[in-house]
Structure formats: structure tokens, C-alpha cells
Length: 233
Image (cartoon, rainbow, N blue to C red; front, top):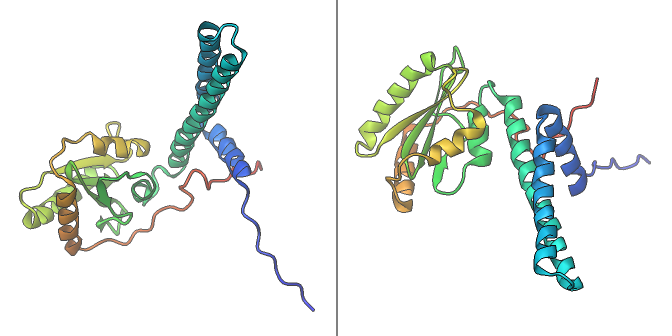
């Protein structure tokens, strides 16, 4: 009688974090130093606070030190998450669909966007993505500015016919020096002046869905907590 095939177990949380750390260290040589600083500074602050605020008080001294250690661990995890995300995006930079990966995994509340582009050039695979949020409508061009500008302008005209009173902004993500890096897309979106509230964002997003969507898949393996370190060859 044949044995039932066993499904491979998912790695535990600690093993996943170790894999994330290994991947991050491989692609970001400064990550270790940032994480050490994020851990040691709160610990040092806790020790200093213990000596200054709880001299002779053993319980208070321990509490301050423990609080510093916990804060250090939290800071280390935050830095690890951000540097891992940046390293993961660095691996897919320049690939078709990379912007969609960022919009799917990192876009915060207050923004409506699809991981699929609204327009794709079949020849070059340059793409246009659309996000709707407090800053109005933002069109994101994925590819060289010289090729995506016309695509963005065409999409702007289509949108202006549907919602003529909503601001339409551009972001360029590509090889140009003044382009926005993948890890700064969300920050750049949040820098636009607030012009819409939540009900208006939803109404505008629903209205624009009638314009249709593209069909370019996003690169796989973007979630930094699912990225596994590559084995050395």
C-alpha cells in the first residue's frame, strides 16, 4: 500500500524571520548596522534611565532595563521589515508589473488601486497604473519617461472626460534619474495635497472602474516575509 504523500510544512515564524534576515543581508549590506542601532539605542536608553531614575531600587532598575530591551527588539523588527521590503523590491526593480506588486503589498488605507495596470504597451511592456486617494487620481508610469509620458497623457484625457473636476497627477517609476524608486511609491502618493475625502475616493474609484483594466501579472515573491534566501551556488 502506497504511503500518502506528506505536504511540506511551512517554516515556523522564527525560521521565516531568519530567512528574511539572510535575504536582506545578502542584498543590503547596511541592514545589519541599522538593526544593531535600532536594538542597542533603546537598550542603552533603558540602562541610563535605570541608573538615573531608579538608583537603589532593584525592581525599578530591572523594569527600566527590560523596557529598553523590549523597545530594542521592537525597533529591530521594524527596521528588519522595512529593509527587507526594500531589498525585496530591489530584486524586482525593472521587471514588468513591479509597480503593481508595490500597490498590492504596501498601499495603505485611504487609497484605492489595482495591482493590474490600466494600460500596457504590447511592444515594450511599459504600463500605466491608476491610484485614487486623498490626493485625487495618480497615474503611475512604469518604464522610461520618454515612452510612458504619452501613455499617461492619453489616460489623463480618458479620465478627465469621466471626472473633469478631480486633479490628475503623474508619477514616473523607471530607469530615469528623477524617477521614483519602488520603495518610495507609497510615500510619494501621500505627499500629494488632500483634495478628496473617503466617500469621494470610493465614488471616484467606482466611476473609473468603467474605463477597463489591463492584464499584466505582478512579479511573484514580493512579500518580504515570504522571501527565502537563495542557496549559494
